[in-house]
Image (cartoon, rainbow, N blue to C red; front, side):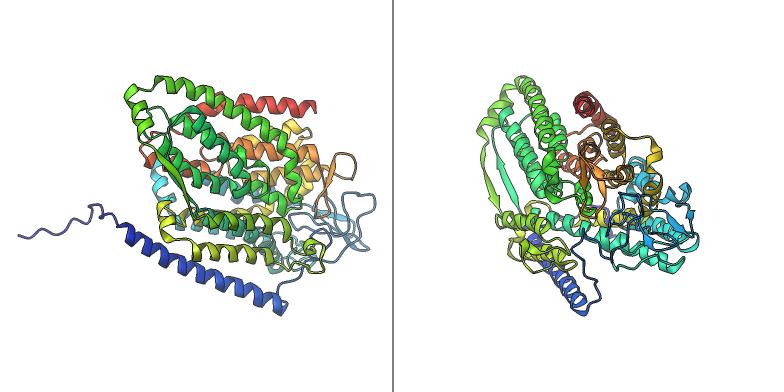
Length: 562
């Protein structure tokens, strides 16, 4: 009797040649899709269907007179939620984001309307930890379905219960009518004004850094490991925390392969490279890029340099002392193997370093509606995104497929981000609108309070939307220009001390848990694939409580004293 084949047996591993050929074919398909997207942008721009931005603080709509006595409202300003305000005489903006008509102030959305936003964040935090749901949540399709359902609930509220009066920042239309017009405005603001620039940047950094491979096996001395963490910390601000983590985690694991004690090295890698290193530029960490989209100047984050230097040097010093103690405990045979089994570091895909620099320059210089380098050329809408996608195409075309095969590169992680943030950006419109109206009622007024509030939520929820929530809260507290007040490119004002605190809390405290920032879990998974027994969720938190929390207490003291 012939036995039927066992379909449950693991598949035979594919040869490197087959993997390279599949990577080449997949890259061509992605590149063709990107070319179509770029041409689509060009056609829409030339046809006038994409409205041009105006060089007036980034506003895409005509100016309106500010409310008398409201210094926070300036010409061309608009609340991030898109809510307009009107008076009997003229339409104008105020910091609350509520709607006025005939002298009557309409209330912002009810608090229960925030539930879809809370639900998607709790799903991200809890579903991977629930055994019965973890496997289903692992599939990006299911993440997208959850995000879509919650988005539809939010849009149903805007379509049936919201009074209207929103401003469309993408088309420039004012005061949407209740119903379909308001739904269209919410989708336009969430998708075209925020989500599309956000996901194109992350996609560009992810794909281009995936074409850069660093391989080798150095002696795993404490100084060598410190050098890895230090280099990664610097790179994180320039190629993103995800890019730096993906470039360096595998050579770091290979370097420590012969050592017994290496879990702490991966934990500190998450602390520094995946989180605290990404503080200096908007492309370093997603929260900072969202701040850039909301009007924070590109180079403003360099003001965080003292905190970046102090925190990361302190973490590297702690790690060095820690690793020296563990290195002394290693067995002699393991040290001998580590010293003799050495391979020099080899970098492949070097072209991608230039392409990553191109992404940085695109974000810094190609600001829609602004003059390019003081020339007469005004950057069209989505020109920046098209430029970054062209750089991605160059990476896919000219990087050898084998390089990405060596990185175990695929699109799963970035598709996951797109699926979830699609829903986050739509459901987030409700809490932003509420915060514009009632942010001052939360009782937060001091930098250390914003630092801990944004930080603790960033530890257990995604740090990008958490940053936006407290950004809007701080924005609602600031009503006039003055000393220590930053004027955003949108025309609004925000206290710099509060913005510093929110930025530090969202970026640094994303390191407190595996779910605080996207690269954390990715690094954990790669380490476990390499047979490194990583701590459990709460085991990792023990490291962060012992090491990070004292550092953050020191930062909060500095914030309170300055």
